[in-house]
Length: 147
Image 1 (spheres, one colour):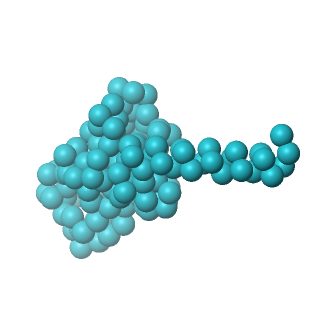
Image 2 (cartoon, rainbow, N blue to C red; image 1 turned 180 degrees about the vertical axis):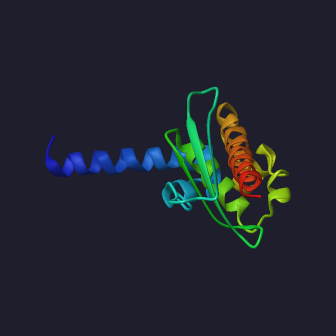
């Protein structure tokens, strides 16, 4: 295989992978997979949670509060594309929310923000919602200790 044939093969392979990912994740999910937002561990968060889902993926969510609202949020996961997209949208959903409003974020909210996921990956939205709750629990626990 010549270099130009190899390049053409790799370009076609990447196009097929992207087409499959776009079909599985939907337009919004695909765009977020290609251009992650709110990704990475946060230094000195006010609250953080770490949950391992039944699939073995682990997700972390970090929250920074200002004036009783989430001013910054981020996530980290060692999981698949669906976990990454779910964590990213969950972090985004947290922004501007009070602790009380965070308790209302569900897997359905995360899925609605994404648009769609493959049926076999819907548990990733549950993992993201559970991780937000763990981060909130951590934050509320630290508030009790300080108070």
